[in-house]
Structure formats: C-alpha cells, structure tokens
Image (cartoon, rainbow, N blue to C red):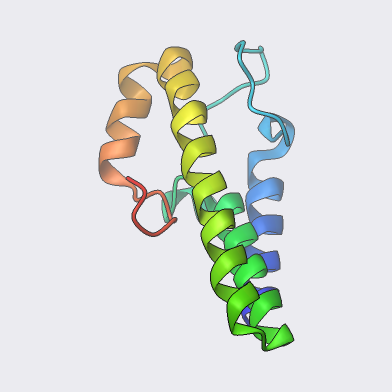
Amino acid sequence: MLTITGEVFRKLAIYTAGKGFSHLVSTKRKETHKLVTTGVYHLWRHPAYLGWLLWCVGTQLILCNPVCFVGYSYVSWKFLKQRIQVEESYLVQFFGNEYLKYREEVPSGIPFVD
C-alpha cells in the first residue's frame, strides 16, 4: 500500500506541475516556470519527492530485509534532503519572497527536512 500511495503522490505532483516539472533541478528560470501551490503542492512543497520516498520505503518493506530497509531508506532520505536544499536555493532565486512565504506556510513533505 505504501508503494502505491507513493506512486500516486508522485504522479499527482507531476500532473499538477505540468510543463514546470523536470527530473533535473533547473539552474535557470524558464518562461514556463510558475510557482505551483495548488493541488498536492498545497499540502507539501515536494510531493513528488515524498511520493518517491514512500515508494522506496514501501519496496524495501515488501522485500522484508531489515538491513536493506534501514540502509535504502536512509540513503534515499539523505539524497532528497540534499537535493531539496539545492533546489530550494534556486526556487528562492526564481520566485523570491513568494517562495519564501510558501516555504514558511507549507511543509516539505519529507521528514526532518524544513
């Protein structure tokens, strides 16, 4: 169930972001970039990452290997934490105070990542 929930969150995030979604962190603002704060982005700043993390954790639970569960979950979380820090620095450059206000009001969706 966790993997399915994660996949649903990720797909909803991709659909909601539309043309603004990319698998790569953008370092330059494009005309198509808009700050999306509706849909699942109203609940979490990074719903696609939340979905991916839930999917990762869920797959390890299915495998029933506690060592892999802990290791893979930690590595996935650490990767997302670092990626979010980099991505948000660009989002602040792109959207300024609008993003800072959004970041204050909406949680990241990833545990222990503000």
